[in-house]
Length: 90
Image (cartoon, rainbow, N blue to C red; front, side, top):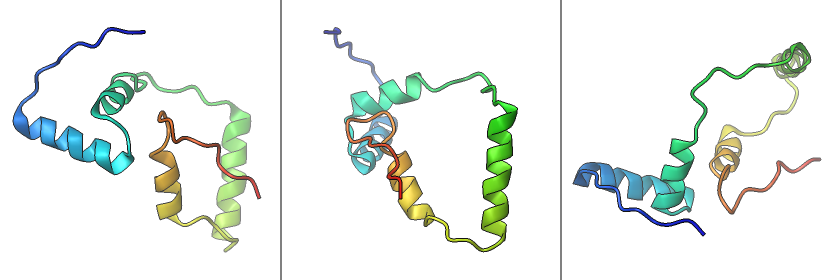
């Protein structure tokens, strides 16, 4: 079990953190933990991953069915939270 520590922020920042945490369905502590652990270095990407992204983009340009952005955003917001579930496969 980790020890909790209080961190002081100005009132406006506290309100923003509380609102954002509520939007995501997490606690302020969980939100701050996620923000503190975000990668700051560029991420290395394999050439095969780039090729897969290119293939998928070509399908989108060809008009194949895509997932609505709102659904993707809702799913992305669960990353790092207890509500996270893998993307459903078809």
